[in-house]
Each structure stands twice: as C-alpha cells, then as structure tokens.
Image (cartoon, rainbow, N blue to C red; front, side, top):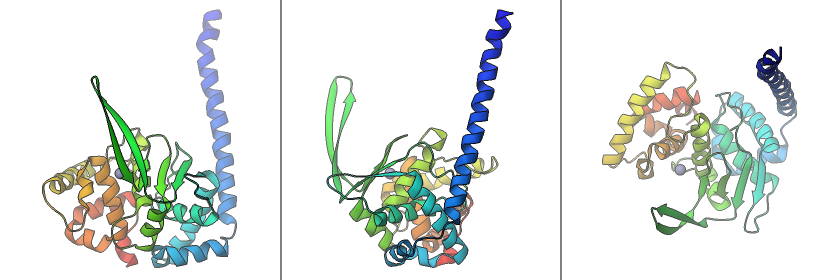
Length: 272
Ligand SMILES: [Zn+2]
C-alpha cells in the first residue's frame, strides 16, 4: 500500500502543478487582454511619433497591435535606472516599442524568463574577468547594451534614442539585445531561435550558416561586420538589418530576408 502512495505522489503533485499553471496562465492572459483593451495614452503616441519613425511607417493594424504590446510590456517588465538615470514613462515606452516590434506578429510570450531592464544614461564602461587555467585577464570595454543569459537586458539611453530616431542606419541596440533574448529561449544563445514550424529548421540552418560564413570572409555593405563575431551576433545583427534596411537586405541576400520574414512573420519591405 505504502509503495503505491509513494508512486502516486509525484503524479498527483505534477497534476496539481499543471492545474495551478493553467489558472495562472489564464489570469495572465485575462490581465493582458484587459490592458490591450484600454486606450493607448495620447502622450505615449506622441513620443512614438516624435522619436520612433518606424512606428509611423507601420500599417494601421500593426500600429494598433504594437500599442497593445507596449502596454503589456511596460506593465510586466521592471525598469531600473543606473548611474543616476531616472526612469520615466517615455523611457519605458521607447524601449518597449523597439523591443515589441520583434514580437509584433510572432505570438511570443513577451520575452519570458527575465524581467529587468537596466538603463544607463549613456554608453557605459564594463569590466570583465576571464580565466584561462591560472591566468586571469581583465578587459574593459565601452558598451551600448548587453543581454545576460536568463538575466537582465542592459542599454544606454543615448543609444536607445539614437537607434529609435534613425530607422535606416541598420543599428538598433534595443532590437539587437532583445533578439538575443529570443535566441536564448531554447536555452542556448547560438543564433537558432525557436522556429514556428519544424519544417523551417532545415532551410534556416542551410541559409544562415552559408550567409554567416560569407560574412566571416567577405566585407558586406548591408550587414554590419560585427555579425561575423559569432552565430548569435549574426542573428542579432541581421535582425537589426531586417527591420532597418529591409530593401537592401532583400535585394542582396534574398534567401536570408526570406528566412527572417518567415521567422518574424513580417515583411518590412512593404513599410518603406
Ligand atoms: Zn550582441
């Protein structure tokens, strides 16, 4: 009898866990739907119009969808000012807008697995210690942003504004760091995010490895050379290029554009 109870315990425990998860997910879903149904504050819209030209290029249905995502993102993420930087609603909205462009059509669960966004006033200096055997080396570098595995996203506000205001230079620190967040959802930051359909993996691997190798060995006037640092950086850099230089990317790298079009379920060429 005792042995049956012991065997049954994990089954009952897992069942209760699934039930609790179900109700928590349902409550989250309801809260999000309520937020999306609320009207978008006019001041927030004016900040987008003033500082994020890509917003105005979106078709109206995607503008409305983005506004809904922004409200949820601002409600669920925690923004922390660093080095004396003050977090305002404008800061939250401009970061949320650029991050949520990435999940506009994908049905992503608002970048799960982390909630904190640290914001520095400007490009900040970070020091890192590397250990190789008994040897410790310390490197110091200036950063516009970074994304910690399962940890916070860190961005410099001056770079956030610059990225938002110039929507055609192929550089956007928020899109870059949040692309890393999408990439790590399968527990590895390796340039292979979770794709919607199993059938996509083969062509994704073929096209991205071919294009990554090409960037490693040849200068490209559309994709920034930083993308050749690693497969993970390639995914983040091509994400910036996809949203900010879609026509050039499609013309010069049509297969790559097609893979990103399928992944993000968006066609930014049409917004130009
Ligand atoms: Zn990166």
